[in-house]
Image (tube, rainbow, N blue to C red; front, side, top):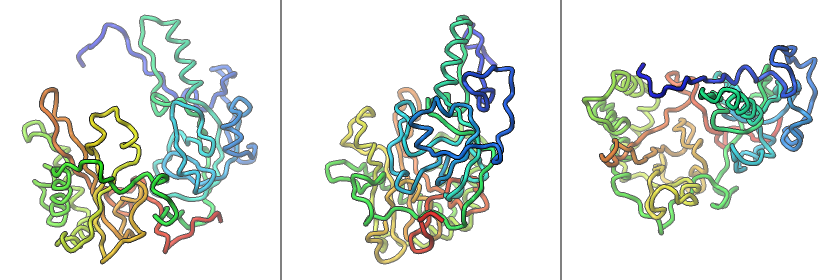
Length: 354
């Protein structure tokens, strides 16, 4: 590997600190955190006064979704600042359990409390002692200062998944995905790319699918890009879903944008959309049933709609942008066992606590 700096680089493995309280000696290994030796508490208690819980073995109850544990279904709507004030009603689960990514469920978690902020402070101290080295925290805490719990045991409470939020429940100001305002310009290239991807998946057109999902030149395309595309198009469930949209003109189309994209004007002109979600209704109408968040665009067969995401792809310095289009494979597909699944459809599950 070519050297890019004379300074030695040390990746400080966060796992060394996951189970160690800030005040503990690095050489002293704590006891295993088990339910019998844990203290029952709440997410709010840890986030309000972390210093009282640092390094302790605790037992928490909440909704596990992605890499977070939430106090309630409503807490999933809270804004989270990974480098700001602690999220009052949710807590990071770290390391993330990949075997549970595809489910959002009420669980009881037993684990030891830690903090990315503490890990970064330790590394900062080491950096001062070793000024000629580059020392950094690896893993999730490389870009976050949040508190977390290291899950030793996760017990699922009941089998029903948590239902997604409907348009009737949430006003636009509280939705993550909103119908694109008339004041925002929708580039025609994005719409065309989304529609072409629908056809490419339905027809299992490998060349067109590669061109849209991995918009790089044929000369520099890697073998794993081609193999990945073939594997994705071998997902018969995904293909069958998009074959339902053979005649797009007969299906209601809606264009959505992440509300935060409109609030962040740091990336170019905020009046021109750079990332979109384009959805089509599988039946005559999806009024009141359109997605309100990105996780609801997982193209699960239970959804009343199918969606494609588009975004600007930078080809390289001075080479400009092209449009990339992607369709999230259903998490229930055997080809993607670790995909994060969206919340359940309201008609098929209950979101209340068991």
